[in-house]
Image 1 (cartoon, rainbow, N blue to C red):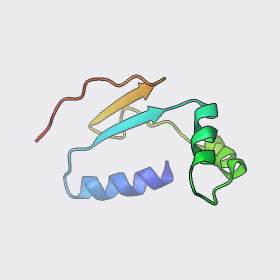
Image 2: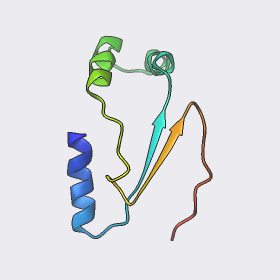
Image 3: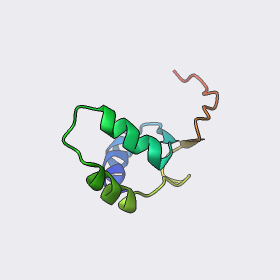
Length: 79
């Protein structure tokens, strides 16, 4: 959340309209994807990061969209 707060603060300083999309996949899928990538990031490190992870709250942005279990809501096009 701390990293999100820094980014959001910068955006709000420029009066940006902020849409946040939270995409959640299963723990097994996270590890599977990590193993398929060419990376030095270990599964152990990912597990440590997951323990610190905080799901966004609806008051962090003008619009927060939650996509859980491979659901993808229809998004409105903005200009």
